[in-house]
Image (tube, rainbow, N blue to C red):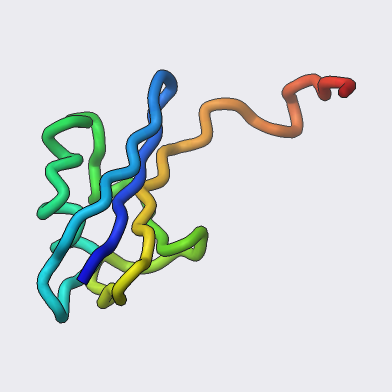
Length: 86
């Protein structure tokens, strides 16, 4: 089955499309993607993960076509950042 794994740091975004075995979990897909080698700062013990913007667990099964997202901590408090006028 085909899935995507996405992560973004301050400087770049990566969305890897890959084929994984059936009955794959979120953790299996992340490991299979190689993204942990590209971004050694990722710590899955503390960072949250999701599928299409909804938080999920590393043990959750994935389905064909899903996008697994690895979230990083928010570095700015949105209540303290000045609002930009558009």
